[in-house]
Image 1 (cartoon, each protein chain N blue to C red):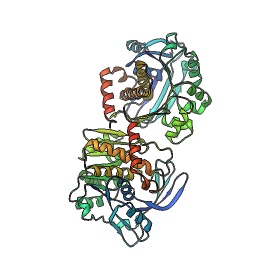
Image 2 (tube, rainbow over the protein chains, first blue to last red):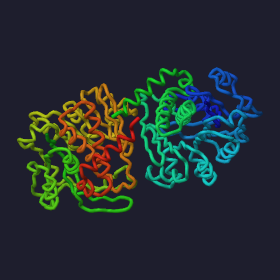
Image 3 (cartoon, rainbow over the protein chains, first blue to last red):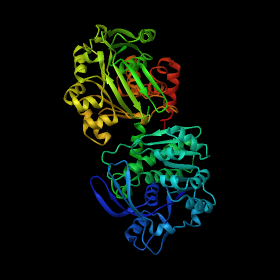
Length: 298
Length: 298
């Protein structure tokens, strides 16, 4: 049982209404890997530059995340800078692709046969390249963003048609499907052949849908949101990590995965970077999951 | 077992992105009464003018809603005109209070001892006058709106402190509590002594909270929203109607009430006015409630 995560590794500079941090560890692959590792073995595929601090590599090693597929190349690490005017919507101030511009994800031999693959939010062309390398995988999940819907929709559609599960924001699925009604938008994407659509609704939780089934999950109540960066990635990481652990992909297991993803995300947003996310215990995750289930039980 | 609803009775002119209707039956008391009547006996307390069509009175009679407390006075009926640029947010174009300006709600003798009272969204001073008339009521619920939070907050607080349950929109409770975090806002209102806080989140469902318990319910998926007017009122009517029927007010019953309120609201928004809401069957309501419960079951 193991999860392979392909995505960005970043140094983030983030401003929230109350605080500001510079060059902290971030990126979709980082958040997803650390969240997923609470449930299963994780391999990370990504690229960093010469300036990437050894302390971050040490953290991945300490978390026993497989970094055989983490490549260090000449140049600077990918940087993202954003500001939250409120804690729901990020405004990108600056993106420096740096070494990420030339990133060609190569799956290590192990990774080609792992049971769950998470294609983080990267250019659909790269996602297609990764898909071509996978020999077998029980479940392939993908994430995306508005940029690719705007710029490379035909390629994005090709990716969607080849995966089993898509994580997508509410605004983005409406934009992609060109439907203002969320349920119509979900149906549109299911009609492309993807088995599960997971709509991320920020502070309103998530919807999981298949052709036959539907499941709503609220957020885990967090009184003090410090930094929402990585919420979607830690959600996807916890979600796919749980699936990899269970090696089952029926709707009942998907529902449990949604709960666990919600819990890893709720922990992530209570600090900058992975400060909080890296220090969870299985007991904490289990207790919070049980609380959340209690709050939807009828 | 019975429910008393005090609120507005209106002739609404509504524009949506696709259609426009003029002087259709509306008002918080109308939506709530018709929704509540699927569960229990309902008495309506309100005022109309000389121009109020007999057909609407006939409808209330046909629905066997007690109209002893519905007063007809000289002048014109309350009129509201609004536009929905999208189907989530109403923009008020015009409000003509007319006979509603002088409305003094008087509870009929029966109504003073009914088991559930719903104080619709009217001026807090009027809500206080109604509260003074209630001899006994197992549960008193109230609704409110941003206008009263802006203009008459001290009086509104007096009302909140005297009721058992408050229905309030997410934006409004944040505004009232002066908290941007919804869970902090809920705690603030619970600290005033109200037993149950029911936060209406539009297309994101509702949160019900007491000091000890929490429950999240999603919306019932509606593909084609025709007109959201009265969604909150039909929710409150179905909710309190179910409580009146059960004569139980523990959290488990409150949770069931939230499901039923969600279903009456989902039916309401599929047509203008009460076209759809008035034609439900108990079987339809039961089937939709069971579907909704299935979609949150884990």
